[in-house]
Image 1 (cartoon, rainbow, N blue to C red):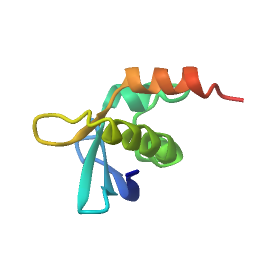
Image 2 (cartoon, one colour):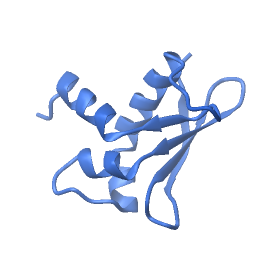
Image 3 (cartoon, rainbow, N blue to C red):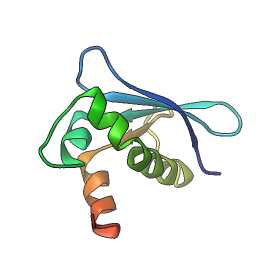
Length: 94
């Protein structure tokens, strides 16, 4: 079942983002790594605007990883720069 985005924000440390997504049976926390924020677009940037600008991309990646049960030991999905590169290869920018 695909995850549905509820909200997203950059951590106060500025090191990573968090998405709160509905799994149908509860909330799923998604961690968007700093390197994923840097890799999603040029110029590389880690800020709230970048997270919000590409929140749909991060949500789609997270939902696909959740469906494949690619979770950490705490049950969270992590979106990394490798995930972003894979997404760019599948859906090149126009």
